[in-house]
Length: 287
Image 1: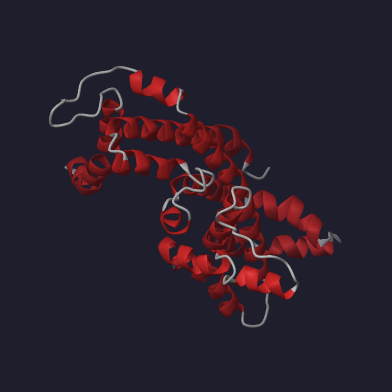
Image 2: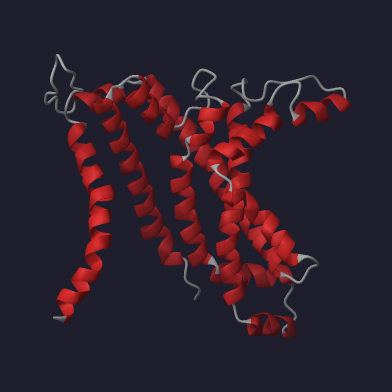
């Protein structure tokens, strides 16, 4: 009877998990092996044709490179900045609660609102960046219209929004550390940098792994800001994988090819998660 009661408690969550996670993933995988059906031409089994089309799609490879570069720029920067902010607000400083709130505020803003906010920074001639640059005699620049700067602009905005969220986890981890460790280190004459490198940071590695996994997922699922800022342009220079899936599915109405792209995205995230957990998790616990 106790087992039945436990399964009944799990049933609502299991239904939601299956209905909104597992079933869509399996349905997407199946759909990737079929052509896109229309009223005149029904869907038919095409095997790996969609995957062959993906392999020959130059836009896909460009978008994948964009997303990998975006992830490589935002993930370590967000984590490092979050750790620095957590250490800063964990110390005794004036108006500590206000500083914590200021760091965390960007996290609670919707991504569309954040994109509109940063649009006032990046807009040519009338944007804040160009206004400040004009004071020093520098020319105006189309930050979001230049392929060489658009990705960096998106990365800066993303780090600004996400670092405060990751800071909360680091702050909670720092507050859980025993103060006796720092007192013992001071008695032994250890410097603050040595104490952080040999004691604090190793003890924070489980939190770092958790933050790393979340940062990786976030770097591949961001799409809202592209609607407001660039629409993936110029010439796909800022296009990311999830936004490309949206374009293929809802602009070009190639739902089967969009399913194929989604399967590749899921496989890529799964592979990254396996690497992180299998290789990094073995080193996250302090010895």
